[in-house]
Length: 389
Length: 160
Image (cartoon, rainbow over all chains, first blue to last red; front, top):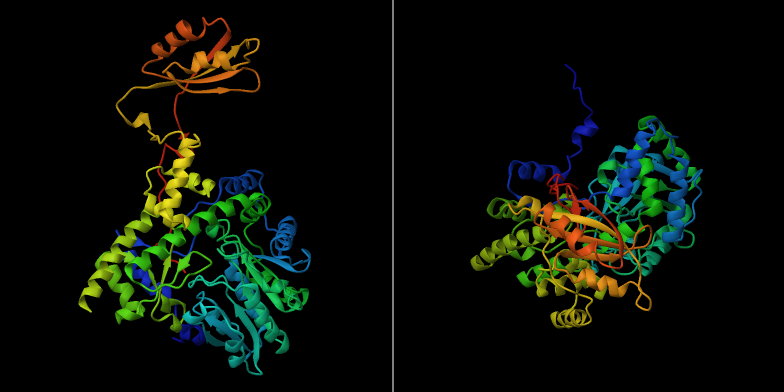
């Protein structure tokens, strides 16, 4: 029989998180600090709107780009929050999560051999989506000494004549790093000078704990070079609804919509109706959840510092990224031993790129009681390690 | 900062002072002083426990009574209110807008006890014009907490 599967896909390594997921799933009583989604339920008024749309029989496809009312709300949100103005008719697409928007962007923009600058540690899908779109991923290693922010020099160092897109994954999963306006201005200069495009993944934009998030699209001369990706999963605790969006210049958007049209048709209708409600009346929920994350962020940072584990202060998302290099183990070994010996699951930094070596991703999207329980066990584990050294 | 302290202890009054300070990024003394001040100013009026009596063997009856009264000259509603809320059976007591004047939340051991309170104590008061007693059949949610089921974490243990 002929080889039934594609060589390209076969050569694509599976998500680094997958292996760890399998181990954790085997263990029934493990306490996990390993999730990448909010611990809150979707606020009831948003769920209610989804239910109501079903009751009204709104169970049909929507237009490819998404419900017009939703696109309008997205535009008014982006304008109100981040001072970027988009046209609902031609510059917005509603997607199946931010993930689809990443895939669409890369597929719509890359020609074979085009290079994509991907700062790591970062979300797991930028590299494979680039490869699937026949692009060439070029990794930029973010450093703890820079608070895992991207610098102009790092970008300049990796630019070649083939470089087309710079991925900007901030606020960052897994490091919790953010980029402030002054940082973005430096990057924007390079992008304009070198005629690049930016795919900015701002899915955690509502979760910053120092000032308000700034979108690179709002900087002068950047909107026409930016594909802005955001969604409802993290800000409104709507991961399972699978709803995100992209905002981009018309020329790029037209091509993105084509792919979406053939591959997806339209994002889930129920989710779209719920999302309208989220954007219209969800500000208070977002503020409430953010305050709660911030409290737990402080708690976790304090706990790690008490244990004598180095951890830079992350200012976004809902992760801390402690440095465990001093224990003389790889991230994988550390995470596996922690799981086996204390039944606490965290994600090795290497799941988000090789340069995550020496770090762990610890999520604080958990109740305080749960965090305490897990931290007690981590402390025990570390004490044992310290005694041996 | 007061609002933030209250936001946390409203849901969990048993939280350690130390934890509270870490969560809010303040030092313990500041938090302790602020709480003491709020107690003194009667912003914080007590630290109660939310009990679902339905899950105990204790029998309890809760009733909500709508009361219409004639306010007294020069005293408004406050004088008559005082005469009602001082009864230890009265769990909560509010002045209302709308079709009636007071809401009395009453706790008793039996329906008979509640009925007796209404007919012997409340209804005969000079200022009371009428009462309407409603018994609580089932408590689904109280003080922002759902009583009928516990929330389970249904997320997968590891996600990207």
